[in-house]
Length: 131
Image 1 (cartoon, rainbow, N blue to C red):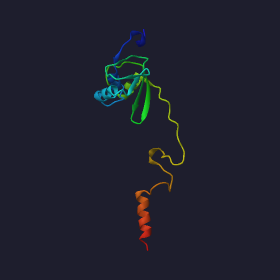
Image 2 (image 1 turned 180 degrees about the vertical axis):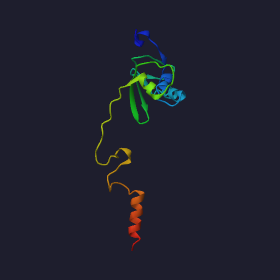
Image 3 (image 1 turned 30 degrees about the vertical axis):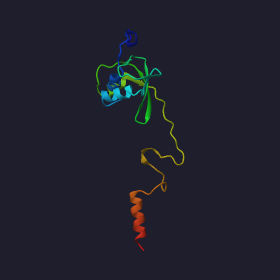
Image 4 (image 1 turned 135 degrees about the vertical axis):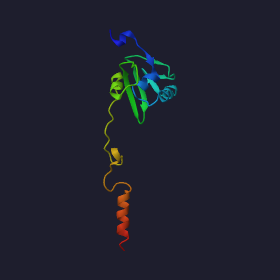
C-alpha cells in the first residue's frame, strides 16, 4: 500500500520547513499567510493548509520560482539529503543568457566593460601621477 493511498497529510508550513525550503517554520508560515504559495494551482492563504503526496507546490524562494511535487509527508526536519527525499523538483532550468550588456554569473565581466575595478583604478592613478 503506497503513501498516496493511505492519504497521510501534513501542514503546509511544517512540510516546507521539513523539506528545508525555509530556515524557520514561522518564516514558512508567513510566506503561506501572504498568499505566496500555490497548492495545485490555487493560492494558499493559510499555513494550516494540508499537503499530501502528489500535490504540486509553486512558490518563490530568493530570486527563483520553485515548482515542487510532494513525495513524502516527512516526520522531522532532518539533514539535507533526507529532506531531498521528500520532494521532486520540477522547476524548469533557466536558460543561460549570453547577450551584450547582461551581467555574467559570479561577478565575471569582460575586460574593459563597465567601471574599472579597484586594482584598475590604482593602475590608472599610478600612470597619471607619472607626469
